[in-house]
Length: 234
Image (tube, rainbow, N blue to C red):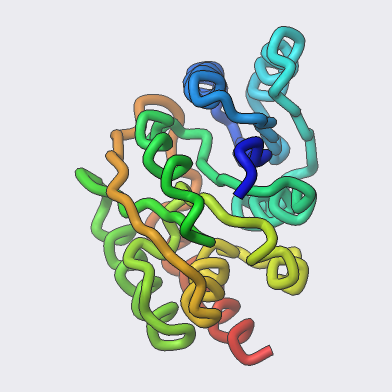
């Protein structure tokens, strides 16, 4: 593998004015310290607060930050758009904008990439409502039954993907897919890709709030499970 692999970081953002500045600073500093050729692509999913203004302000002094403003379509479709837009890089990495998973754990992913196609985090020290714990367990079961086992935390937003291994499959995932990361994890398992899992420390959210709660969460989970199952048989 060449030493100058290019990396594009995909960060979906919605109403994160309290955290996004710290997130961008954290990831920029980490990636620069590793000497990586990188760009951070932030996809502002129709935020209603000052998120867009903050991002554009940061981009004025951060040459590695790209801001994409788009109409609201939801977290999953925004992630998927980021993937499909940036398959010209060697590697894609996806992380969320809530600062619950930080750049401190990234070194081990990047340093181990040579021998793997898919490097994914397993969240530890995670404190979540019961509803989210249940949906996480069901997600793992659905992916395991339909695609095969091999990934423990199938929906974690901390994943490094070799573009050459995923490109053709990403293009076939429907744009409106609610939880594309479930399908991505499933593809890695079903195609027998080389998978590496690392523990990543989960931090409690300090700003903003989760947008999908309780009954809405279960309805969203059912939708994502259905889409994940149907994609397996396309």
